[in-house]
Length: 271
Ligand code: PML
Image (cartoon, rainbow, N blue to C red; front, side, top):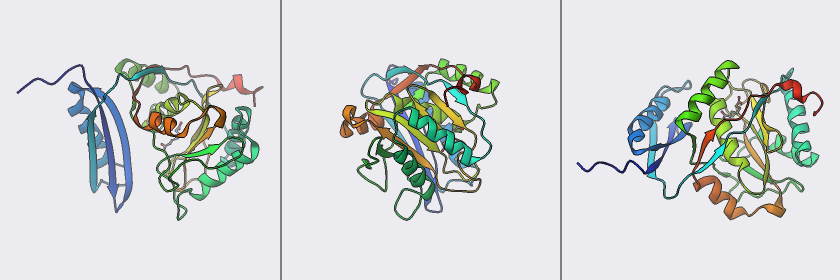
């Protein structure tokens, strides 16, 4: 057997379904030597999902064609809120401070809470909204824009796990959302992101923007609500749709440095 090329990097992506609908999705970037272990871990994750065992799993393994871009993860802050309404109010204020017009903030919250895909269900990809006018820019309103091909280096992964453990946040929701938000913030013309989970048991969410990093709100939706997703806010003067979609979906990004975990006290004046 010819030994595989140890210098190549691979994108390893998993999508799982149950009962005809999406159950789980996750992805990694690894070397040829990592592929088997990473693919097995992704399959295990789909087979042990809290909402039931996957009925179909698709795992795609593709060699990356270019060198990944290396970057630092955003800083993380958690702001305590009394309930999801308070969370949305603070998240809205953060977005406004980062340049999103107040009616566009309100539109984004309405779209996420109503389910932005046709039929009032959550979109798997993100919505793109013009931060000034609120115009919707994602070309396929049923699908939205996916973010793919991003991961941590092994060293950054262990540093992040250590840091998140100290604040009780070392879980896949936080880790993966932070990595995704990190890639979104590298996209020219995207000025901010708003996200909360579509998992009815996970009510936290975040706002991410260059000026503030990744700001978490432990409650951004009522418990039991299924609708959620992501909105990316765009500054049209610095944004090119095709280039942004290509970057978000196809350009590999490896985070080799982690950001600090910041104290919420620094925020009292800001919001
Ligand atoms: C998701 O898992 O679907 C999104 C999670 C967003 C919030 C993650 C966090 O707790 O910081």
